[in-house]
Length: 193
Image (cartoon, rainbow, N blue to C red; front, side):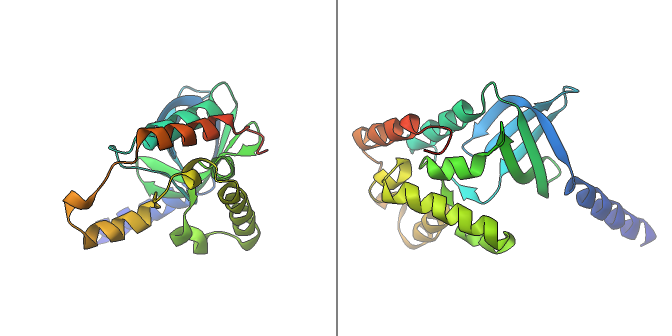
């Protein structure tokens, strides 16, 4: 019993120390539209996930690859800083990623490449939450990226909808609509304009 208690205590200390970690480096790999591998100055590779956003995740959705490419474009050649907020598990950290001082989660929202993750908003400070909401509202009003695709829903809504309908009801978004939305994302400037 003492061994188990010691292991839990060590786990707590490890996760608490990661919550205070700031990493600096360059992008080594973009896994998906919100998950990145950072290579630090000492050549350590760390997998990190952008906080408070969701992106299209279904492999059959062509837009998933477009969003992943957009994230890579935002990060390539830039100095990245990652402030850990929490651990997803032992192989991944969740937090704030900045590229040359720009909050990448906010930029993804502004470019219409992500949804603000409403289920996670209670874990966010109110001032930061308001900024994320305003940035997303601007992208929505301009129908940038995901907001220009009819019937494209956030991950949490798709999960609930899939539980209620048969698999044959899934339909693929027409490529023409996806490509026009991709052009809107690619035209969005990294400065948030």
